[in-house]
Image (cartoon, rainbow, N blue to C red; front, side, top):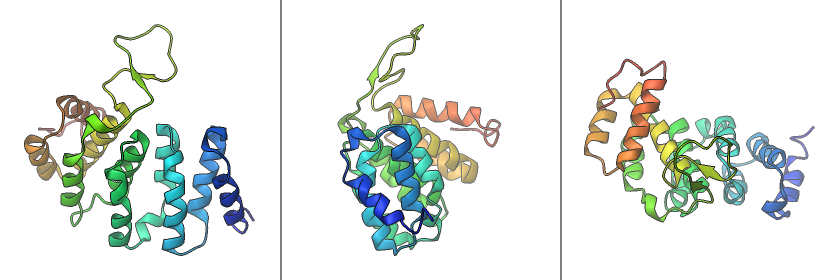
Length: 205
């Protein structure tokens, strides 16, 4: 029943200022986009209005994990649509496209294009609402991270590379060695690889 009237609910969410939406409402909005029965063009149009609303890693990653329609979509059309987000200056718009690339495009025919875009990211121009704090505060401070800005893009790239290492170890190592990635992103990637059961015994570099 939710899906039957999903388009109306999605339109209602679109009409509300994003800052007025709570976490749960933003999650529901994303799930409705994924569940709606519609054409690819219609779904991409809804997604174009949804992505700028993403403001934290949990909503972003939850949406991407449940966007199973992307696995069945025409990949060239979807990839062309995603290009705008690689060039975004907004942290979670870039995080979104990085996680989508990791989840639905880490295949042999696509990883060269994925790596090329990852290597072209200009981390210095991506704006973040999260501020870096040094050390480990005794009390968690909302809106802060313990890493260089934009932390959630850097961590997303590290996650993608650790996932790629599990699938294409030789190609991933070769890419990282020759890439222009910031040193801290490479360190995050190595840490992620060591933490994963799939790659903890695999050489990262």
